[in-house]
Length: 230
Figure 1 (cartoon, rainbow, N blue to C red):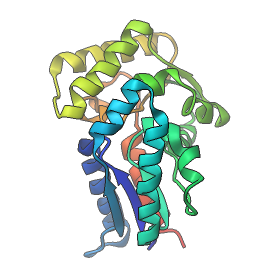
Figure 2: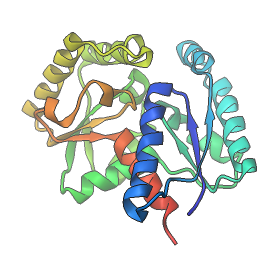
Figure 3: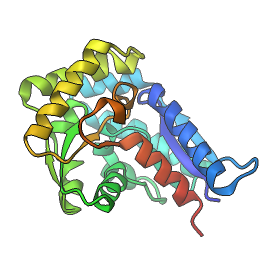
C-alpha cells in the first residue's frame, strides 16, 4: 500500500471527511482491520484565507509547497490536496516536489465521463467558479461546465466562507443552493459538481434535482484506490 500525503486544514471540516473516506475505502477493499497509510499536514487556514482575500497567492504557494515537501520528506508517495481552490497552486507546488499530486479535477472528470454526462453545473468558491484552473481540465476531458450568475456566485461563495468553513450548516442556505441547482437544470445541466470540499456538508444527493458529483468524496475514494494499485 502506498503512503498518502494528505495536505489538509482548508478547512479542517472537510479534511475529516477525507480521512474517513480514505480509511473506509481501504477497509472495504482489503477487509479485516486494514486502514489507509496516511501522513497528514494540517495547515493553519487563517493565513491562507487572508492571503486569498488580498490576492497574495504567492504566499499561499510558499506555505503549501513547504507543507508538501515535508510530506514527501516524511515518506509520502503522492500528494492529495484536500481542497478545490488551492489546486490553483498545483503548478507551483509541483515545482518543489518529486512525487505526483492526484488532481481533484481529473478524478471528478473521470467519474462524470464514466456516467456518460457532458454538460454539468459547477458550484465552489468564487475563485474556483470564475477562474480557469479547474475548468480547463474539465474542458480537456470533454465536459461543458456552467456556473451561476454573478449574484449567485457571491451567494455561493459567502455561504462557503461565512458558514460552512466555520462549521455552520443553515437550512436557508440549503434552499438557496437548491434553487441555483434547479436553475442549472433548466439551462440544460445534466449533473452538478460540488466543487468545494465543504459543500457536501450542505448538499447531498437527496437535496438535488440533478445527479451530484461531490469532489471530496470522489477525490478521496480515488486516492485510496491509487494507494492500493500495484
